Amino acid sequence: MINRRHIRVKVMQSVYAMQQSHNDDIIREEKFLKHSILKMFDLYVLNIRLLVEVQKLAAKKIALSKKKILATQEELKPNTKFIDNKLINAIAESISLESYLEMNNLKNWEQEKEYVRIIFEELQKSDLYKKYLNTSEDSFKVDKAFVIDFFKEIIAPNEKLADYYEDIMISWVDDIPFVNTWVVRSLNKQKNNTTFTLGVLYKDTDDEQFVSDLFRKTILKEKSYEQDITDKTPNWETDRIADIDMILIKMAMTEFINFPSIPTRVTINEYIEISKDYSTTKSSYFINGVLDKISKEFTKEKRIVKIGRGLL
Image (cartoon, rainbow, N blue to C red):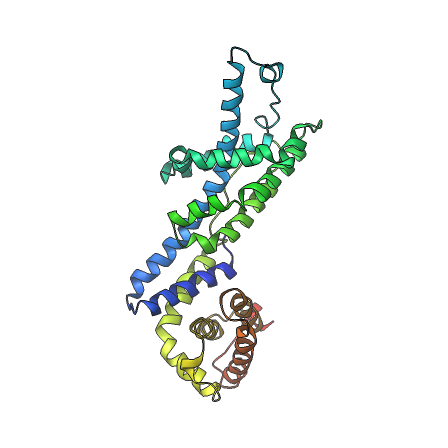
Protein backbone atom coordinates (compact mmCIF):
# COMPACT_ATOMS: atom_id res chain seq x y z
CA MET A 1 0.00 0.00 0.00
CA ILE A 2 1.08 3.59 -0.54
CA ASN A 3 2.59 5.21 2.54
CA ARG A 4 2.51 8.82 3.71
CA ARG A 5 6.05 9.44 2.45
CA HIS A 6 5.12 8.53 -1.12
CA ILE A 7 1.85 10.45 -0.87
CA ARG A 8 3.88 13.54 -0.01
CA VAL A 9 6.13 12.93 -3.02
CA LYS A 10 3.14 12.61 -5.37
CA VAL A 11 1.60 15.81 -3.98
CA MET A 12 4.94 17.63 -4.32
CA GLN A 13 5.14 16.57 -7.99
CA SER A 14 1.60 17.77 -8.67
CA VAL A 15 2.18 21.15 -7.00
CA TYR A 16 5.40 21.55 -9.00
CA ALA A 17 3.68 20.59 -12.27
CA MET A 18 0.87 23.04 -11.58
CA GLN A 19 3.33 25.87 -10.93
CA GLN A 20 5.48 25.13 -13.97
CA SER A 21 2.48 25.00 -16.30
CA HIS A 22 0.95 28.14 -14.73
CA ASN A 23 -2.25 26.17 -14.49
CA ASP A 24 -4.80 27.27 -11.88
CA ASP A 25 -7.33 24.48 -12.42
CA ILE A 26 -6.98 22.86 -9.01
CA ILE A 27 -9.84 20.40 -9.61
CA ARG A 28 -8.31 19.03 -12.80
CA GLU A 29 -4.85 18.77 -11.23
CA GLU A 30 -6.24 16.99 -8.19
CA LYS A 31 -7.98 14.48 -10.45
CA PHE A 32 -4.69 13.83 -12.24
CA LEU A 33 -2.91 13.42 -8.89
CA LYS A 34 -5.41 10.80 -7.74
CA HIS A 35 -5.29 9.10 -11.14
CA SER A 36 -1.49 8.94 -10.91
CA ILE A 37 -1.72 7.26 -7.51
CA LEU A 38 -4.40 4.87 -8.74
CA LYS A 39 -2.22 3.86 -11.71
CA MET A 40 0.47 2.78 -9.26
CA PHE A 41 -1.76 -0.18 -8.50
CA ASP A 42 -1.61 -1.16 -12.19
CA LEU A 43 2.17 -1.21 -11.96
CA TYR A 44 2.00 -3.32 -8.81
CA VAL A 45 -0.36 -5.81 -10.48
CA LEU A 46 1.69 -6.00 -13.70
CA ASN A 47 4.84 -6.83 -11.76
CA ILE A 48 3.12 -9.62 -9.85
CA ARG A 49 1.48 -11.00 -12.97
CA LEU A 50 4.82 -11.03 -14.77
CA LEU A 51 5.94 -13.85 -12.46
CA VAL A 52 3.05 -15.97 -13.71
CA GLU A 53 3.68 -15.13 -17.36
CA VAL A 54 7.34 -16.13 -17.11
CA GLN A 55 6.31 -19.44 -15.55
CA LYS A 56 3.77 -19.99 -18.35
CA LEU A 57 6.48 -19.38 -20.94
CA ALA A 58 8.72 -21.92 -19.21
CA ALA A 59 5.91 -24.48 -19.26
CA LYS A 60 5.27 -23.81 -22.95
CA LYS A 61 8.94 -24.33 -23.81
CA ILE A 62 9.01 -27.62 -21.90
CA ALA A 63 5.90 -28.83 -23.73
CA LEU A 64 7.43 -27.94 -27.12
CA SER A 65 10.72 -29.67 -26.28
CA LYS A 66 8.89 -32.89 -25.46
CA LYS A 67 7.36 -32.92 -28.94
CA LYS A 68 10.71 -32.83 -30.72
CA ILE A 69 11.33 -35.83 -32.96
CA LEU A 70 14.84 -36.24 -31.58
CA ALA A 71 14.13 -35.08 -28.06
CA THR A 72 16.89 -35.73 -25.55
CA GLN A 73 16.33 -37.62 -22.29
CA GLU A 74 16.50 -34.28 -20.46
CA GLU A 75 13.82 -32.83 -22.74
CA LEU A 76 11.59 -35.88 -22.32
CA LYS A 77 11.95 -35.77 -18.53
CA PRO A 78 12.53 -32.06 -17.77
CA ASN A 79 13.06 -30.45 -14.40
CA THR A 80 9.63 -28.99 -13.54
CA LYS A 81 10.57 -27.33 -10.25
CA PHE A 82 9.95 -23.84 -11.63
CA ILE A 83 6.59 -24.59 -13.25
CA ASP A 84 5.55 -26.37 -10.04
CA ASN A 85 6.52 -23.40 -7.86
CA LYS A 86 3.88 -23.20 -5.15
CA LEU A 87 3.92 -19.43 -4.67
CA ILE A 88 3.66 -18.61 -8.37
CA ASN A 89 0.89 -21.17 -8.73
CA ALA A 90 -1.00 -19.50 -5.87
CA ILE A 91 -0.64 -16.15 -7.66
CA ALA A 92 -1.83 -17.73 -10.93
CA GLU A 93 -4.97 -18.97 -9.18
CA SER A 94 -5.67 -15.64 -7.46
CA ILE A 95 -9.22 -14.47 -8.11
CA SER A 96 -8.46 -10.91 -6.93
CA LEU A 97 -5.54 -10.65 -9.38
CA GLU A 98 -7.52 -12.09 -12.30
CA SER A 99 -10.49 -9.83 -11.54
CA TYR A 100 -8.34 -6.71 -11.43
CA LEU A 101 -6.64 -7.58 -14.72
CA GLU A 102 -10.00 -8.15 -16.40
CA MET A 103 -11.77 -5.10 -14.93
CA ASN A 104 -8.92 -2.78 -15.90
CA ASN A 105 -8.18 -4.46 -19.24
CA LEU A 106 -4.51 -5.01 -18.37
CA LYS A 107 -3.39 -7.20 -21.25
CA ASN A 108 0.18 -5.93 -21.35
CA TRP A 109 1.90 -9.30 -21.18
CA GLU A 110 -0.38 -10.75 -23.86
CA GLN A 111 0.43 -7.85 -26.16
CA GLU A 112 4.07 -7.35 -25.16
CA LYS A 113 5.35 -10.92 -24.96
CA GLU A 114 8.86 -9.76 -25.77
CA TYR A 115 9.35 -8.52 -22.20
CA VAL A 116 8.24 -11.86 -20.78
CA ARG A 117 10.83 -13.53 -23.00
CA ILE A 118 13.55 -11.07 -21.92
CA ILE A 119 12.92 -11.77 -18.25
CA PHE A 120 12.77 -15.53 -18.78
CA GLU A 121 16.05 -15.56 -20.67
CA GLU A 122 17.70 -13.51 -17.94
CA LEU A 123 16.38 -15.94 -15.37
CA GLN A 124 17.61 -18.98 -17.30
CA LYS A 125 21.14 -17.56 -17.46
CA SER A 126 21.26 -16.79 -13.75
CA ASP A 127 22.98 -18.82 -11.05
CA LEU A 128 19.88 -18.24 -8.96
CA TYR A 129 17.78 -20.32 -11.38
CA LYS A 130 20.34 -23.10 -11.72
CA LYS A 131 20.75 -23.37 -7.97
CA TYR A 132 16.98 -23.48 -7.47
CA LEU A 133 16.47 -26.25 -10.03
CA ASN A 134 19.16 -28.31 -8.32
CA THR A 135 17.70 -27.86 -4.84
CA SER A 136 16.41 -31.19 -3.59
CA GLU A 137 14.14 -29.71 -0.90
CA ASP A 138 10.55 -29.39 -2.09
CA SER A 139 8.84 -26.87 0.17
CA PHE A 140 6.86 -23.66 0.07
CA LYS A 141 9.65 -21.96 2.02
CA VAL A 142 12.22 -22.72 -0.71
CA ASP A 143 9.77 -21.76 -3.47
CA LYS A 144 8.95 -18.44 -1.81
CA ALA A 145 12.58 -17.54 -1.17
CA PHE A 146 13.35 -18.22 -4.84
CA VAL A 147 10.44 -16.10 -6.12
CA ILE A 148 11.43 -13.16 -3.92
CA ASP A 149 15.04 -13.37 -5.12
CA PHE A 150 13.84 -13.78 -8.71
CA PHE A 151 11.88 -10.57 -8.42
CA LYS A 152 14.61 -8.63 -6.59
CA GLU A 153 17.54 -9.77 -8.73
CA ILE A 154 16.02 -10.24 -12.21
CA ILE A 155 12.77 -8.31 -12.60
CA ALA A 156 13.24 -5.21 -10.42
CA PRO A 157 16.62 -4.10 -11.87
CA ASN A 158 15.82 -4.86 -15.52
CA GLU A 159 16.40 -1.66 -17.49
CA LYS A 160 14.41 -2.67 -20.56
CA LEU A 161 11.39 -3.36 -18.39
CA ALA A 162 11.85 -0.02 -16.60
CA ASP A 163 11.99 1.78 -19.97
CA TYR A 164 8.80 0.02 -21.03
CA TYR A 165 7.03 1.11 -17.85
CA GLU A 166 8.23 4.68 -18.35
CA ASP A 167 6.79 4.68 -21.88
CA ILE A 168 3.41 3.61 -20.50
CA MET A 169 3.27 6.33 -17.82
CA ILE A 170 5.97 8.89 -17.10
CA SER A 171 5.06 9.15 -13.40
CA TRP A 172 6.00 5.48 -12.97
CA VAL A 173 9.68 6.46 -13.10
CA ASP A 174 9.46 7.66 -9.50
CA ASP A 175 6.96 4.98 -8.50
CA ILE A 176 9.00 1.93 -9.56
CA PRO A 177 11.26 1.69 -6.46
CA PHE A 178 8.29 2.07 -4.12
CA VAL A 179 6.15 -0.44 -6.04
CA ASN A 180 9.02 -2.96 -6.16
CA THR A 181 9.24 -2.81 -2.36
CA TRP A 182 5.48 -3.23 -2.18
CA VAL A 183 5.63 -6.35 -4.38
CA VAL A 184 8.36 -7.93 -2.23
CA ARG A 185 6.34 -7.17 0.89
CA SER A 186 3.28 -8.87 -0.64
CA LEU A 187 5.29 -11.94 -1.60
CA ASN A 188 6.82 -12.14 1.86
CA LYS A 189 3.39 -12.12 3.51
CA GLN A 190 2.12 -15.12 1.54
CA LYS A 191 1.62 -18.31 3.56
CA ASN A 192 1.49 -21.89 2.34
CA ASN A 193 -1.89 -23.24 1.20
CA THR A 194 -3.56 -19.82 1.37
CA THR A 195 -5.21 -17.77 -1.36
CA PHE A 196 -3.07 -15.00 -2.80
CA THR A 197 -4.86 -11.67 -2.42
CA LEU A 198 -3.72 -8.35 -3.81
CA GLY A 199 -2.77 -5.64 -1.35
CA VAL A 200 -4.78 -2.44 -0.94
CA LEU A 201 -3.79 0.96 -2.33
CA TYR A 202 -4.50 3.02 0.79
CA LYS A 203 -4.11 1.89 4.40
CA ASP A 204 -7.40 3.61 5.29
CA THR A 205 -9.73 6.46 4.33
CA ASP A 206 -7.59 8.91 6.34
CA ASP A 207 -4.64 8.34 4.01
CA GLU A 208 -6.86 8.75 0.96
CA GLN A 209 -8.22 12.02 2.33
CA PHE A 210 -4.69 13.12 3.21
CA VAL A 211 -3.91 13.28 -0.54
CA SER A 212 -6.68 15.79 -1.28
CA ASP A 213 -6.28 17.87 1.87
CA LEU A 214 -2.51 18.25 1.60
CA PHE A 215 -2.70 19.18 -2.08
CA ARG A 216 -5.64 21.60 -1.87
CA LYS A 217 -4.56 23.40 1.29
CA THR A 218 -1.00 23.85 0.02
CA ILE A 219 -2.18 25.32 -3.29
CA LEU A 220 -4.84 27.56 -1.76
CA LYS A 221 -2.54 29.00 0.90
CA GLU A 222 0.76 29.12 -0.96
CA LYS A 223 0.79 32.92 -1.36
CA SER A 224 0.25 33.56 2.34
CA TYR A 225 2.84 30.88 3.16
CA GLU A 226 5.28 32.66 0.86
CA GLN A 227 4.89 35.80 2.96
CA ASP A 228 5.47 33.79 6.13
CA ILE A 229 8.64 32.31 4.63
CA THR A 230 9.85 35.81 3.65
CA ASP A 231 9.22 37.04 7.19
CA LYS A 232 11.02 34.09 8.79
CA THR A 233 14.01 34.09 6.41
CA PRO A 234 15.04 37.76 6.17
CA ASN A 235 18.48 36.83 4.89
CA TRP A 236 17.03 34.94 1.91
CA GLU A 237 15.21 36.32 -1.10
CA THR A 238 12.32 33.98 -1.91
CA ASP A 239 13.14 33.96 -5.62
CA ARG A 240 16.56 32.51 -4.75
CA ILE A 241 15.07 29.54 -2.92
CA ALA A 242 14.94 26.42 -5.12
CA ASP A 243 11.43 25.72 -6.44
CA ILE A 244 11.29 22.25 -4.89
CA ASP A 245 12.57 23.57 -1.53
CA MET A 246 9.85 26.22 -1.52
CA ILE A 247 7.16 23.65 -2.29
CA LEU A 248 8.38 21.29 0.44
CA ILE A 249 8.45 24.12 3.00
CA LYS A 250 4.90 25.16 2.05
CA MET A 251 3.66 21.57 2.28
CA ALA A 252 5.24 21.24 5.73
CA MET A 253 3.54 24.46 6.81
CA THR A 254 0.25 23.01 5.62
CA GLU A 255 0.84 19.99 7.85
CA PHE A 256 1.82 22.18 10.82
CA ILE A 257 -1.44 24.10 10.70
CA ASN A 258 -4.02 21.68 9.25
CA PHE A 259 -3.04 18.23 10.52
CA PRO A 260 -3.18 18.32 14.32
CA SER A 261 -2.49 14.59 14.72
CA ILE A 262 0.87 14.69 12.86
CA PRO A 263 3.76 15.63 15.22
CA THR A 264 5.71 18.69 14.07
CA ARG A 265 9.03 16.83 14.23
CA VAL A 266 7.63 14.01 12.06
CA THR A 267 6.61 16.54 9.42
CA ILE A 268 10.03 18.23 9.44
CA ASN A 269 11.89 14.90 9.21
CA GLU A 270 9.70 13.70 6.33
CA TYR A 271 10.38 16.77 4.20
CA ILE A 272 14.09 16.73 5.00
CA GLU A 273 14.27 13.16 3.70
CA ILE A 274 12.27 13.96 0.56
CA SER A 275 14.56 16.92 -0.19
CA LYS A 276 17.57 14.59 -0.15
CA ASP A 277 16.10 12.67 -3.09
CA TYR A 278 14.51 15.51 -5.06
CA SER A 279 16.41 18.72 -4.40
CA THR A 280 19.95 20.07 -4.01
CA THR A 281 22.67 18.66 -1.76
CA LYS A 282 22.30 21.52 0.74
CA SER A 283 18.51 21.63 0.68
CA SER A 284 17.98 19.33 3.66
CA TYR A 285 19.98 21.66 5.94
CA PHE A 286 18.19 24.74 4.65
CA ILE A 287 14.73 23.17 4.95
CA ASN A 288 15.49 21.90 8.45
CA GLY A 289 16.58 25.38 9.58
CA VAL A 290 13.61 27.19 8.04
CA LEU A 291 10.99 24.71 9.25
CA ASP A 292 12.45 24.59 12.75
CA LYS A 293 12.23 28.38 12.96
CA ILE A 294 8.74 28.54 11.46
CA SER A 295 7.42 25.76 13.74
CA LYS A 296 8.66 27.59 16.85
CA GLU A 297 7.18 30.91 15.68
CA PHE A 298 3.85 29.31 14.74
CA THR A 299 3.66 27.53 18.11
CA LYS A 300 4.21 30.85 19.93
CA GLU A 301 1.54 32.48 17.77
CA LYS A 302 -0.77 29.51 18.49
CA ARG A 303 -1.08 28.79 14.76
CA ILE A 304 0.11 25.26 15.49
CA VAL A 305 -2.18 23.30 17.78
CA LYS A 306 -1.46 19.60 18.05
CA ILE A 307 -3.67 16.97 19.66
CA GLY A 308 -3.40 13.24 20.39
CA ARG A 309 -0.43 11.67 18.67
CA GLY A 310 0.54 15.09 17.31
CA LEU A 311 1.65 16.15 20.80
CA LEU A 312 4.45 13.56 20.79
